[in-house]
Length: 96
Image 1 (cartoon, rainbow, N blue to C red):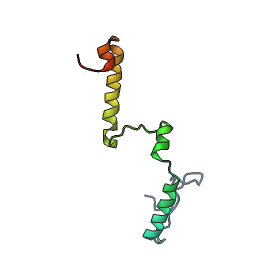
Image 2 (tube, one colour; image 1 turned 45 degrees about the vertical axis):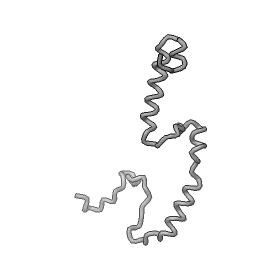
Image 3 (cartoon, one colour; image 1 turned 135 degrees about the vertical axis):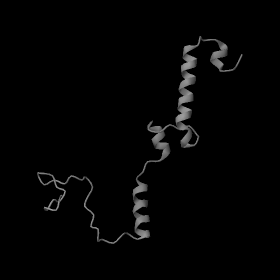
């Protein structure tokens, strides 16, 4: 179907792909080069404390798999406390 010289370029000659072209014959990086590259990229990554301070992450102090459940439990508690009358039992969250 595209055997007529189609090169994946758009009408104006721009590439349809946003990723850079990779030479399929170029050698793969060695493990040491890949490790060094990853280390360079990770050094610019913000710490978890920074992300929590910027309100990008929430610090629940639990495993990441439990964050959604814990957030939903916190929301349910806030909703319950805001809907209930302001009594000492409701304010302290202790059963009667």
